[in-house]
Image 1 (cartoon, rainbow, N blue to C red):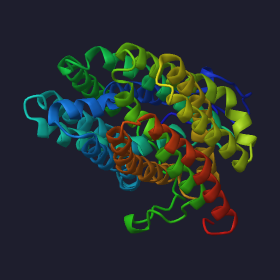
Image 2 (cartoon, one colour; image 1 turned 180 degrees about the vertical axis):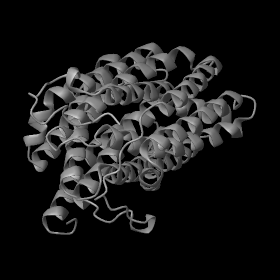
Image 3 (cartoon, helix red, strand yellow; image 1 turned 30 degrees about the vertical axis):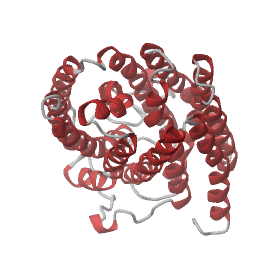
Length: 398
């Protein structure tokens, strides 16, 4: 396969896009397209489920929480499967499953239950795809090159996340055309992934059985990653419902686009600084920004919501990248397995966000004090990281 390291050991280092191999560029482009399709739907799932299934917000929270857990926690068995059958093959299988899931969303308008089945199928496909594409991207790269590859992967993915909500906002009341386009795009990507070179397996690499998939887990960054997603996903899962009737749909979609574009720009610029930053300092900056952003949402108007999204973007630019680098540096397991661990942590956090956040949102909505929901999340942004960090320093999360 095309080498994922430097072209020759004696060649001068190159920076920027020109230093990436053709395979790496294809994988970065794939990350953009996958997120473009996924996030044209994901921010509006709460609205879609309400319309098709006539569910209450507490019930929507349960569905989103379980589906998100499958999507993220599926990274552990997904990584184990990818190690056995190969990363390139796993990418092809994941895209085939995504194609079927997109077709399920299409027919879900007539049979609402199929919408939920398609949601879980696409979640399982993402559980396989994510550790496979991240592991393939850094396959064979040196430790010095990994931060640059990781920030590039996050950047291209975030551009897809940025464009997705705007596309989704145009089709939210008539999504059939979007689901047709998604099915076609996923099918084309499945064919394209079939032409990627198969990765060479390192003969020294030990492949653990599935029952030992969590061996070598980096516990502290695992816990911080779970906490990051738990707090952050309140924003992504419930802001669309909060904004309904307060903000124009196109403005909300544009604000979400601005958030992801900011991540795409900030993370590569902050890569070296975040890499050198102490973990405790990164947590203080990241979770402090999350708290400020949640408080800003209580304003309920365009300026305050936009300001909150801006601050959240700064905090997550630090937290997402630092958590990934810490997980890679604190274990001897392969990057694919590490990214599977990371997906499990993200799944735990995201599912708790749906399960706990849905009930909390329903409580404040019923009481007629919905801005209080964001104050409750902001308080958790300040308190919970301190508890996790103290537990880590006392060896509880060693």
